[in-house]
Amino acid sequence: MSKVRVLVGTRKGAFILTSDAKRKTWNISDPLFAGWEIYHLKGSPVDPNRLYASQSSGWFGQLIQRSNDGGKTWEAVGNQFTYDGVPGTHQWYDGTPHPWEFKRVWHLEPSLTDPDTVYAGVEDAALFRSCDGGRSWQEFAGLRGHDSGPQWQPGAGGMCLHSIVLDPSNPQRMFIAISAAGAFRTDDGGETWRPVNRGLVSPHIPEPAAEVGHCVHRIAMHPTRPGVLFMQKHWDVMRSDDAGDSWREVSGNLPTDFGFVIDVHAHEPETIYVIPIKSDSEHFPPDGKLKVYRSRTGGTEWETLTNGLPQSDCYVNILRDAMAVDTLDSCGIYFGTTGGQVYASANAGDTWAPIVRDLPAVLSVEVQTLP
Amino acid sequence: MIRVVLPAHLKTLAHVSGEVKVEVVGLATQRSVLDALEARYPMLRGTIRDHVTQQRRPFVRFFACEQDLSHELPDVSLPDPVVMGTEPFLVVGAIAGG
Image (cartoon, rainbow over all chains, first blue to last red; front, top):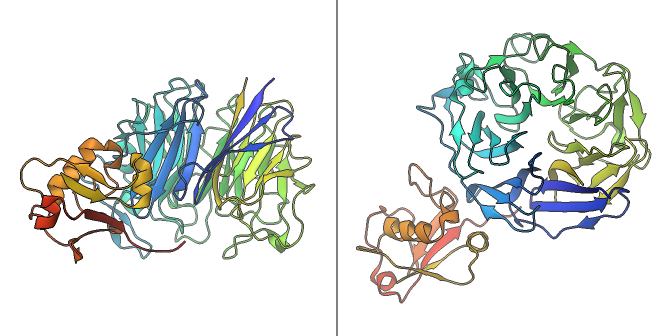
């Protein structure tokens, strides 16, 4: 019988939640890396027992942990993230030049084909890769070296590279997104990059339709349709049908088009999920009611999913890496909140229940479907 | 042997409890002690001082013999009681809540 393993990164450690395919009864692990911020952990698609975790602390900096046994034991591997060459400057919040400074790893994306290869999206924004299981890291300097690099600015959470989307049909192509520079694509394995932000409009920046400067929160793709991308931007839910060359808004009837997460159903490439959040300043669900929105039409037409979710006095946020799906039939949807709850739906969002209610603030959720 | 006391998180990371002892070749300084510590416990590299610049991380301090050594030059000899092994070299994380 299949099993599900949910990897949860929090402000104070990581947790592994496991269940069988029914997804009704869950085992919650003891905290891993207790007291440390775990921005993200994720398993290799080709070796699910190979996990990588980003462990960081304001005191002791960045560590990368690796497990070869599905999270039972861990080994600290390489943590030297050195920008290639002279780092130069990007723009600070006030528009003045600011030197590129490594702060932390936001997202780890294991290769689709090699368990020893893993990509790391870091703050200040850059993309690194390890080909030796995390022992050493090399930067894809062509991204940060793009002509627009000196104009990039941080979002409120820092200038983070938070989304790494690998194209399963073309190993030379990948997509990344940076707050608040926008989305970029490489077609040559990471050597060169170009912004793919045409169609994004951000009224709060000096040039609302600029080539870069958009606060992209998250990008999602269904593996069977790598040319179709979905984006949750600071404002607006967007869709591209040409691998990012152009985008159109699909916010439709959402109560607010602000949010952080976006994901795609495992078996229905036109079924997508978002969790609208009230902004610009509150960053919690509208009216204190936690609602997931599902579109079965690839956007524009959205239905409200509330069964099992709190519909009063709920003032949590759901951060950009904190939603994931399993590949069981029917598809399971998972998300974690800054209030420490991890919610799961074993029926594609129709009903929800908390797996656990009182973890530290959740930073990331990933799901592995195991044989 | 130089006695070193690590903060709790780094003890966990290095899989040690209590003090650790490191052998230093030549003059016992902050740099030589940290070099020896990182050689024996490679997982500590980058957690106390920067990989490249070797600068102490901002929220880490060094104490020994009731003195704050954080701003001493890295190649200055440590106090005699630390060199003699009668007092430990303390690596301290700044106290902060949250």
